[in-house]
Image 1 (tube, one colour):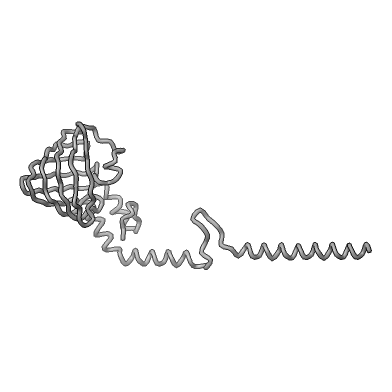
Image 2: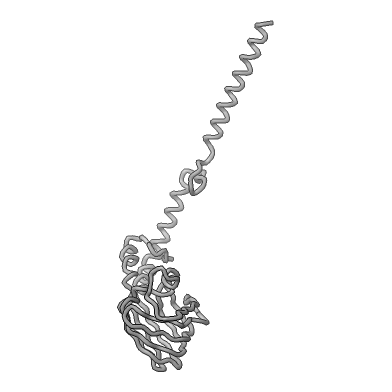
Length: 208
């Protein structure tokens, strides 16, 4: 009787050991988890995706570099009952004053390429300014937005208009309005994206 129980216990123990080994083998076949999720079950899944991304980057290399060059500029022209003029060396050193309404079209900051209607007024001297205007009826990649200052203000980089990239605080340029509206600016903040783009690095995440 003792031999029977000994054989039975030994058989159960061996069965449990075999089951544990099989379970461990199956577990090792599952894709490992990372912060980004499970690995691709195919050994070359990630490599294929990187290769496709690199190939697309090569295909769009010239258009992307051309767009990076255009990102350096604001060039807008328009017309309407608007009068004013201004010059700025960043938002922290400027002299400007304008009021009225005008339809505008052209290249704008942060790929705001298209058209819209300017309506309102703004004025400023040195690091003080007041903006009460909006861009509406946007077409193309132009965005609608509105700036409402209750009084003269000192620009702060934490302002929503800068964080949303509607306005470039570092722009250098001039504008003139007398029925015909002309706005020309240079954006030094776009230079790093242009230079790193030569190496297919895209810090502004604006490549096609």
